[in-house]
Image 1 (cartoon, rainbow, N blue to C red):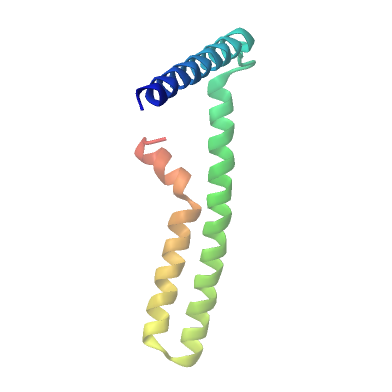
Image 2 (cartoon, helix red, strand yellow):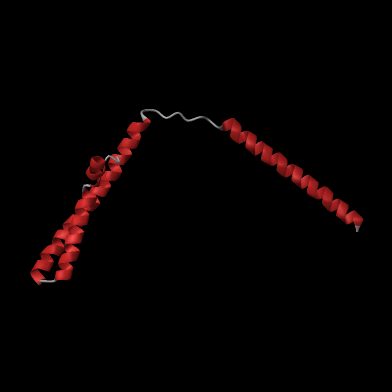
Length: 111
């Protein structure tokens, strides 16, 4: 029984040494082949371009919501439905807020 345990321990040691050697080779290979990346251009300009792109998408969504609010207000005036009129005005003002969010944030001084 001791013989079996000694063989198993020896096998486990060999396995752990092989795993450690493989791990070491992997880490050294990653370190040897890593190349520093240098960004070309102005990083602040890239961030500003991304910000402008995101705000243009938000503005487009705001205009779509604004248009839907106008349609809801028009339908509520035609049907004399007060709750639909309230929803329409909320949608209209929400669309205005979303469409002009960049200008509002700029006026506040956050962007």
